[in-house]
Length: 343
Image (cartoon, rainbow, N blue to C red; front, side):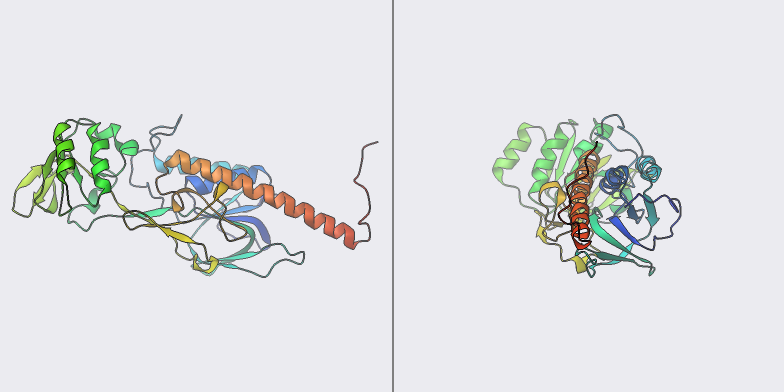
């Protein structure tokens, strides 16, 4: 099927069956769509417009594009997909389900948006990303993505040499502290009710990491819109400019239950979709890519996973197209005809 060449800048949906619907307009989804569109596949991206890294000032660790604001990066990506005939649709998926197969037995899926619009696709790429669930601590959420960070590789250089605090949320926070210690000499570990054994305390002491055992009551602002410190339950305020916190990572699964995609539990209480090579799932015709299946992937890794999934989808569609053509040839009574050859 040729690529979509009309309505590429509107939210109108195509009437016929498209080769692929990509659910999610972040790095993984857009790069998957790019690979499909460049292969002249008809592809529609359903974009909710709420990427995980929207609060961040820039994308980091992405060769050649380090520091690019997320909105700018995704804006470029949308234009590139459109440039090859792909369709970007603003909206959220309300339901994605299996549909009756085509006359030649090929797979079909129905994707319905929350506003009632619907379309049919031969294959699906789920790249909805994940949601960072923050600890329920007053004053914390408002600084997310700026003074409150989670990834030393995404934000570490930008907060180097600042007074940093690590708010413990579980065993993984210990390693979190070691990573952020590489970025500053002034690091305080807030145990916040979690257990810290003597061996770990010794290791922290050797690295100059101070430990505060009194629980944290709230995050205190500095008067300029940033963090000034953390107030403990005994009233003491420990001055900090940056707070690192490991979030609970939960895949965005809204509207996808009908596909029956297998999921797995993550350390720390999160959930993600299970995937195999190239993002293939146990559900025929459905692929997953990016943070929805690989919670630790940064933008570059997510984009690469999307590209790999898109290429895999196109390859299997090519096989399905050929199978359908052979079946049609046989049905027309020419099943024994030899392949066309050049004179």
